[in-house]
Each structure stands twice: as C-alpha cells, then as structure tokens.
Length: 255
Image (cartoon, rainbow, N blue to C red):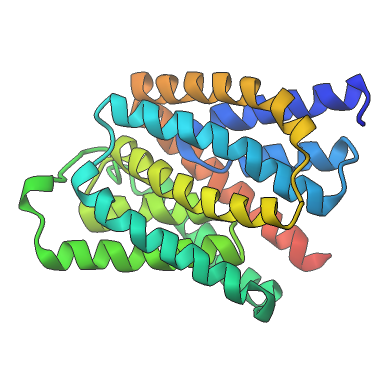
C-alpha cells in the first residue's frame, strides 16, 4: 500500500491530467508519470491509469454531449468500428513491436502540432453540417474510427491528437466540436483496453477508487472551462500536448 505522500502525488497528477485531457487530450502524459513517480510498478500503473482515466473520459464525453458539442448522428456509426479496431488491436498487440511505430508516430504528431500552430484559421470556425453528410462521409469516418481504435490498443500516444485533427480536416469542425467527438471515441477505446487490463489483473482498484473522485471533478471542470472559453483555449493546449507527446516518444526511442 502506498504512503500518504505518494497518494498525494498520484491525486494531484491525475487531477491536473483530467483537467488538461478534457480540454484538448493528452492527459496520460501527466497522469501516467505520476504513478511511476509514486512507485507503482509499470504494468500496474498502466492498468490503474486506464481505470482512472476512463472515469474521467466518461465525465468529459457526457459534458461535451450535454452542451451540444458531440455529433451523435455521426458518432453512433463510428463507435462500433472503434470497438472492433480496439479488440483486434488487443488481439495482435503481442505480435507488433511498438518500437517500429515510434519514429513514424513522432513525426506525425509533430507535424500535427506544427501545422496547427502556424495555421491561424485552422479549427477556428465550424463548417460541419451533420444533415448534409453523404454515405461516403460515414464510411470514411467509420474507417478512421477503426484504425484509431486499433492504434490506441496497440500503441496509444497521439490518439486524441489524430482524432481531433481528423475531425477538423475532414469534417471541417472547429476545435471544440472536434474535441467533443474525439472524447466520445477515446472513451470507447479506453473501455476496451480497461477490460483487458482488468482480465489480466493489472488494475489496483484500491488506488483507483481513491483517485477517481478527484479525476472526475477536475475533468468536469476542464470540460466546462473548454466549452466556456472555446477555441482560444483548446488550440494552444492542443499544440502543447502534441509537442509534449513528440518529446515523450523521442525520449522512449532514446532509451
């Protein structure tokens, strides 16, 4: 059992992560290291972090949905494909060396961050019309949802960034609406991964139960803050998280 000092480290880290993740994703860059610093074994840290972050994802997705920042008509077609992709990803994860993916993902996430940083009008205006979607638009969305569900199960870093970028580029959403939709699909892939971690006995529920209330409160505050402040808040956080994700992957490669 952890001492009170290490519990505080995890609670503070996960609270900050929940707030940041609700606004623009990438909370795992903060929460997971908190578990490591507190001395939680890596495999247990991964499973427990998935447990606590999933609770935050539920609050975030629901808050965005309740405030009209989620396109339910499109998402209901993407969700099953995300589940299918995540299940397949979990099945083949043992066959894929994550080191192979790292350089490619690092370049892609860095490109996403730089493009967003220097494209002033990018994601600032919502041109998405759910009522004018064609069959092709649904198929593309379902295919991308499948790929990202698979990727999230196999590797993970950058999933939120890729989802937001896809919704902004392809569907012409603003960052706020794109974030809401990304949260919904991220929640589904998180749940699938959590089930696997739970079956493997890699979740410390005693830690998770203490952390979850803080995670949920700060995730709610982060979602409300993002919805209230809008693009001017989400965009810089999104760029920062993209660059931090790139740095994390680079450090993993060097190790």
